[in-house]
Image (cartoon, rainbow, N blue to C red; front, top):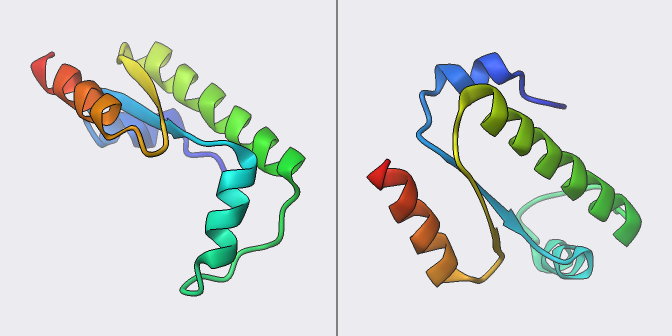
Length: 89
């Protein structure tokens, strides 16, 4: 399910941060998470979903004139830098 740009606009966000991870790492985290039930996905499916999510974020950023930052999962410093940049805007 894709979130329409109008919904993102209504949230009045100041910027976007996409947290990226390798498909295998996502699968492993999902396997260990016993609090949620998720469908089993192949690495190729996870990769495709992530690529679509990044594309949607790029569209939102373009349509709403927002900065989009992509950081790797676990990169706390990169995430903090992205948030600080958004808050400075």
